[in-house]
Image (spheres, helix red, strand yellow):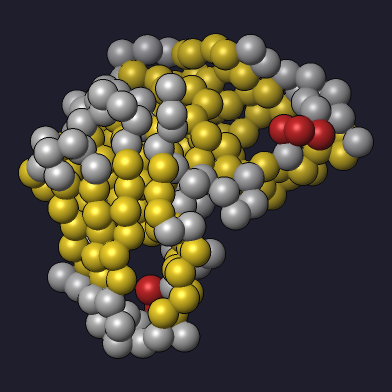
Amino acid sequence: KAGVTQTPRYLIKTRGQQVTLSCSPISGHRSVSWYQQTPGQGLQFLFEYFSETQRNKGNFPGRFSGRQFSNSRSEMNVSTLELGDSALYLCASSFGGPINEQFFGPGTRLTVL
Amino acid sequence: KQEVTQIPAALSVPEGENLVLNCSFTDSAIYNLQWFRQDPGKGLTSLLLIQSSQREQTSGRLNASLDKSSGRSTLYIAASQPGDSATYLCAVRNRDDKIIFGKGTRLHILP
């Protein structure tokens, strides 16, 4: 069974640009969550999607948005990039529901210059 | 507001020793607690998931316990090996469905 995949693995952007990251969950999983990981703040929850609906949201500005498609694949978009957005962005999938185990992808390393 | 703390931030032990990693949380109203390992520059690998109604879970050389009343979880690693070197993270899922991670314990097993 294939794991969670994320594309691209590495990205370099400049301030003010926008970026779109993609996540394909494990087959059969309907929930996708996104996280930002930085050395200073650690892992922080961005949002969670289930069956194409945003179910939960962390404390990030509106520049961070996402969506989920009918095949459960998810995209995350960051507009007007800032230097502080440089981070490892991780997505995780699960069957959905609060008791389910989360499985993580390898992450997308975003560098903003 | 839920806070998850992992102490120590870093730990070095000789190969073969048994060790315990700690995770504490401030709000006991959780659905579950999950332990992960992360190798440098990589994603997270799920190790063990403990539901709020459970006391412990075991997988191979790993055993995780959960004491909701005291807001603590421990991850016990038996007979440590150099391949166990990684950062270990715990995460709780709150009743509001948000997941809060600790900052992790960086473990180094000395050959």
